Amino acid sequence: MIKVFEITRNGEPIGPNESGDIALRAQQNIKQYMSGGIFKAPTGRLRDSIRAYTTGHFIYIVSQLPYANVQNEGRAPHVMWYLLGKTIPIRTPHGVVFRKATMKSFLSGRWMHPGITAKKYVEAGVIMTKEQSPDIEIRQRR
View 1 (cartoon, one colour):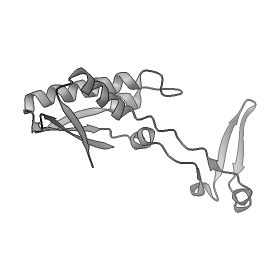
View 2 (view 1 turned 180 degrees about the vertical axis):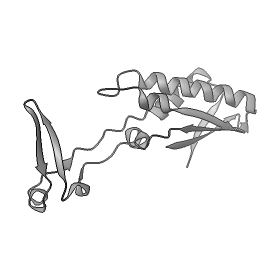
View 3 (view 1 turned 30 degrees about the horizontal axis):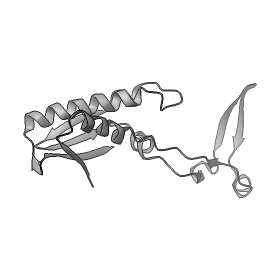
């Protein structure tokens, strides 16, 4: 995951020293927000993977974990076609049972992923940073 934000003051780019300080604050605010109970069973791995870097007046919020963007942006409910033909272990209160993902089970409506609600932790941390420095503008770049 990479998110890029531009930092300006009165429409002018800010200096690299100040942008570094703001990037560090943004990183801390994102991690603080992530620690506030937005995840069901947090391990801290995603939170610890968040890094902020600067180049000029741009902040780059980065995570090397493949699921970081999905957790931040969310994912719509979908059929898990990638399971077709595989044997899936399923935990139950009585132990583990194994189910085969067959075309018949797909056609009967099984193997639906419920989706993931967007956590928007990057955006929340950046908003917190902007509130701490109301004289700066922080805009996400596409």
